[in-house]
Image (tube, rainbow over all chains, first blue to last red; front, side, top):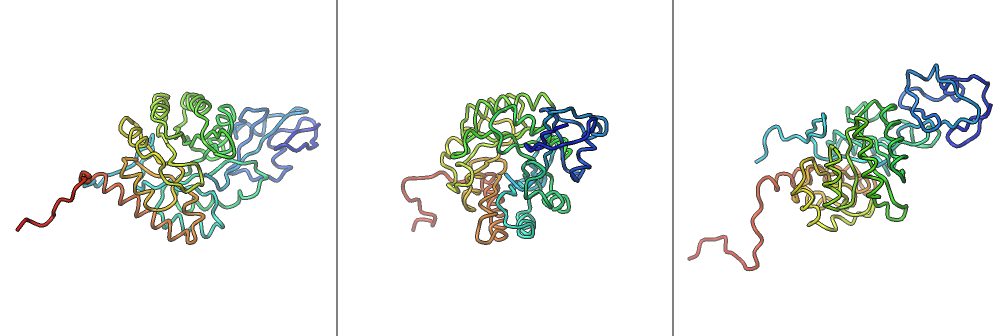
Length: 66
Length: 254
């Protein structure tokens, strides 16, 4: 299935969870947050939140700014 | 004189330093670290960006090591909806209820969009955030933001990054005179005297970034800003003399 992650389209196995995607992307777990189709996915829900085909995932972290 | 316990209180957060530093524009982390230490700041902003963007590495670790409280912002957001989502992501990523709300109207001025800012403030307060709202130097809007439940209101001195100082000191005084929450002068500070003026006008704190990070000697300017904020606070509390048109001798007449 196709997932849009931070604006780029990626291919993942059907039934992947948010946690699976973060592992595949080698994203650090600390200091990041995830929105799935415009809604925040709580950290505790990452292992159970299944991502569907065509979903839009945003993975944000803190950077220097402001 | 100031009391021993002269603290800046924002929501449940109690701070001794009245200087809030932004981390944007710092050349590298070691200069940033020395600047933060020299400034004595206890609260420092970070921006939220896509995790694959550059520049994410190290700043969180640095702030945590220095024991500085994180103040995530919503910089780059153009609408209330975007700002609310960014704030929720910041809360999830950084485990803090603090948010510096900023909704910019356009890239050229980076001025706050008053309508979107007020809408976002209402939504974030309802969602349990401690909201520090970046706003124009508009006394009416400042009151509206306070009424919306913001924990602090942050009027600009001048547009972000201009270093133009406080363009409308009277408006800042008007905002301060009616405020029931801390007023933090944000944006426009160019040099130490601007920070002192903000405090003399009655602001509770100053937030600055570029003035330090892009100074020739960031660490030196951070020290200057720390002294400037302290001087302005003391001067405000000590009651300045009235301004007079004609001279008044300070020595006794013969």
